[in-house]
Amino acid sequence: MGLDLKGLITKEKTTLESFASKVIAVDAYNTIYQFLSIIRGPDGMLLSDSQGRVTSHLSGLFYRSINFLSLGIKPVFVFDGKSPSLKAAEIERRKQIKKEATIKYEKALAEGNMEDVRKYAQQTTSMQDGMVEDAKHLLELFGIPSIQAPAEGEATAAHLTKTGLAYASASQDYDSILFGAKKLIRNFTNSGRRKLPNRNTYIEIEPEIIDTSRVLSDLGVTAEQLVDIGILIGTDFNPDGFERIGPKTALKMIKENGSLEEIEQIQEKLQTIPYHEIRKIFLEPKVSDVSEIKFGEPNYSGIISYLSGERSFSRDRVEASLNRLQKSTIKRSHTLEQWFG
Image (cartoon, rainbow, N blue to C red; front, side):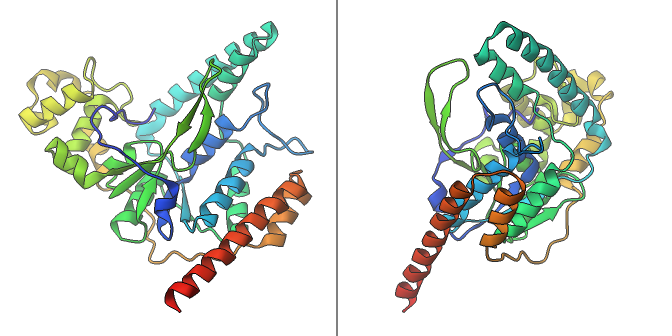
């Protein structure tokens, strides 16, 4: 579901190049889901290797990692741990959506409606056994660090920005702001040219950056009040929110009353929601205690061996992309030598 704050948030267009030399904490699960949704064949099916194992996530990680490292960006991928029990309802809701999408996918396939086939196939996206291990292995070969969070990956990613180990958190979800990320980058891992669903039209998706301190200042609220606004709208921990309360109404209510407890008209419904626990999830999250982030050098032969030898990737394409990375690394090194020479 994700938190619907788009009507309230001030976003600035930016470029990937602007994050050169910066450490970016990436919401790994959010990113892998994007790759699994977007990287598919004409029939909507996921890409797979000679043994039938899914490779769409590896394809996305490979080419994005090449792109990031070529630009001098330092990504660190943060993986989810155990979800809070309050997220059970949202997880069940997502499962139901996938079941319904599967039925629609099979119907569209039988009718030969390939546009709908692809659309509904994307909606069936789910993580499968081994995908996280696949991703971590490929990242390790690239020298890109990964962090295992104890709970929500977004919380640990946000924590890295608060401790100064990362410049920003990268995710499509606005929840990162409620977790306290100093800066949030959206469209970080899916920027580029994309086809609009059911239309023969393409758009250019550009990265956007959100400064949380500016958001709070513009809205005239505190971080604690922003969490209360999220609860009114609906979070992953109370997905239904409050009936007929959208972002603008929620903001108005909190600014006029100060907190959930002071809004008279919601008190009956409020008693059915564990709002104290939800506040604690966002304001006092369980996070990984990270004191240092270490980056390594890409293992070029290891990447070729893994992707081409084990996972059926085209050796020519893998080598061509790695050559591009190597050339950009050498060029950037020479530029730095000239600058400091």
